[in-house]
Length: 387
Image (cartoon, rainbow, N blue to C red):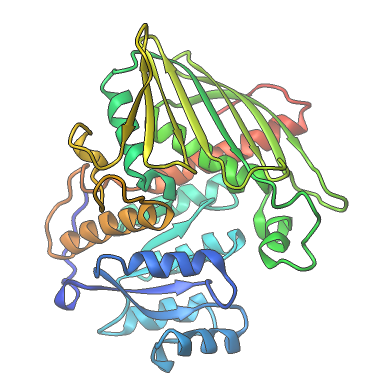
């Protein structure tokens, strides 16, 4: 339970600032659009680029006041914290190497944080951010966006209620093909993700393999006991993985297999989770997010569709059935829950576990542990590594 005595933002709208997300940045634009979905959050400040001219140009295009544009995150944290109308939270949508220092700067200034994944470069950094947030009574969201999909929340409700029995196996895959060619010289997203100084110890496993880890944990609640990984580097001149295969054993005794790839020709963004239990199974595909397949032993497979009354209340939808909801809506669902929690926190009320049901520092820590364990195992010729 978290408590706070900070006064509410005016008119119930939270002000936020963004780190990263300048011209040409994919994920920053997604954050801005989805934070605005429900009218609970408004962009007020930014340090959008290491190049202040880019920040100023981006800010002008977004209609921000010039005095709310900053040369770096440190200046934004300091000056916004001193303003009477300063930002309520910061969104960190910059490359991985910035996450820790930026999040720390805002948290130490008393500003809540939404941070992209992977959370930090090291486990020690992730634990440090959690400690600071807890000591200051601040909310810290790590944006594992897929947990915002209604049918994944339905899958979680069914798995946790025992509808598929005891979990035996978890199969996750996330194949893409966008890095089959070496495009780092012409594509900024490829350039920083394949650069260890900016991405960290892993590219593929850290970027999309971590989504498998989080999605599996979100649905099943299982904790990884140990894993065995092989990370492959495909592409001349690269130093970080572009393909990853992981075998897992969970603390419950269940087993798993995760495959992530950025060089699997014919795949766009095919995150898929299959969970097999003693009574049944569930299967969800990100490219068909409004459908969940559910099979009980000895019965035909059922197709559950988003937006129907037979679903768990946690799978609440924005649109009626048959009107597709996808990536932006999933992001917006997380922002909506985060905003509701922060507005209630600012009113001085205590928050329940249900109201804090968005990806948090613990999820970020588990992701960092998973990434580093995969890298360690691969370097040891695919030996088992304890988490």
